[in-house]
Amino acid sequence: MIKCGIIGFGKMGKIRANAIENSGKGRIVAVYDINPPLNCSYKVTKSPAEIIESSEVDTVFVCTPNSYIPVLCIQALNAGKHVFSEKPPGFNAQQVEEVIIAEKAASDRKLMYGFNHRHHRSIQKMKQVVESGDLGRVLWVRGRYGKEVDQSFFDGWRADPQIAGAGILLDQGIHMIDLLLHLGGDFDEVSSIVSNLFWKIDDIEDNVFAIFRNSKSGTCASIHSTMTQWRYLFSLEVFLEGGALILNGLKTSSGAYGDENLAIKRNPTHLQDGRFESEEHVVYHVDTSWQSEIDHFFDCIAQNQNVRYGTSTDALNVMKMIDRIYAAGRPKEIAS
Image 1 (cartoon, helix red, strand yellow):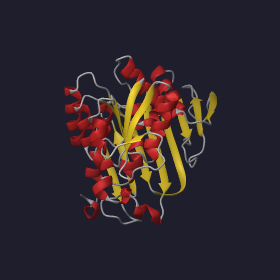
Image 2 (cartoon, rainbow, N blue to C red; image 1 turned 90 degrees about the horizontal axis):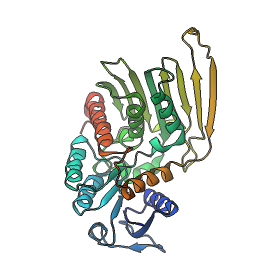
Image 3 (cartoon, helix red, strand yellow; image 1 turned 90 degrees about the vertical axis):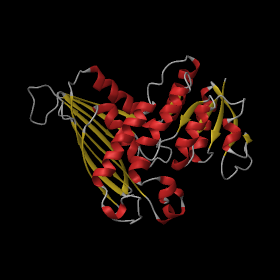
Image 4 (tube, rainbow, N blue to C red; image 1 turned 120 degrees about the vertical axis):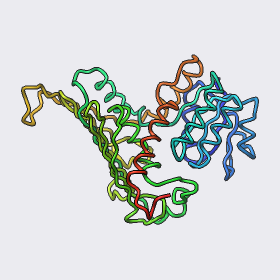
């Protein structure tokens, strides 16, 4: 059994705890939260250090607000622990590079980041189709991901730029950036608009529009990440030479985004008038992403295999892209 300690026992810490227990491969030794949980069935420590330095813990889960993530990852790796961390991996790419230094020094320790959208069954199916080559190469990708927030948003840490680091892109849109890279490949050209038009919180953007291009392949992509989407929305489209993958909805704990409805359209070259030779619809009603992610992490530890999804390289590539989006699109009034 893989012995785990969880730093940060809020919503995400509890989600991870449930997945750890359900895996049958790990057990929770201790947890820590700045607001000590009441009636907790696990040992509650008085500091993160107690978990990181404990000889009874071999794997640390970092489930804290954003600003604490890089330093806790480094401390845990330096202590010889395996590390699973929530996103974002840092405020910028430089912080991720500092974690990677500690990862390399930790030798055989595993580091994985919680880009759990890759583990949704609909996304896995899309990746399978793209990699098969059956529909040719990717021409373009379009992602839209939006939610709404109300006045209670101002009471939480996500409205504090010192703790959150930025707004909706770093909070939620980061998943869409990861999926663009996962399905569409690399992009070396970036243009963007970063806006706090509605909530007007300094350094906390409420909308980001960005477009990308790979100058060698010509593949293009775009995203809209927003917290002023008055009807929750997840939409991811991948158009290829021979068809399209169109996903609407994402199964989450809140249920706000609906089921995952994936359309796979096959378009032979002799039909260029909007018709499709065939169209397959697959609907996923259950979210298995949390469990899939933890099972992958534990298998990598138990079998001493390299992490395949949510690697530090994935994290660094995402943050390099986000750095460029902010640099290109932030107006002076919300620039750091």
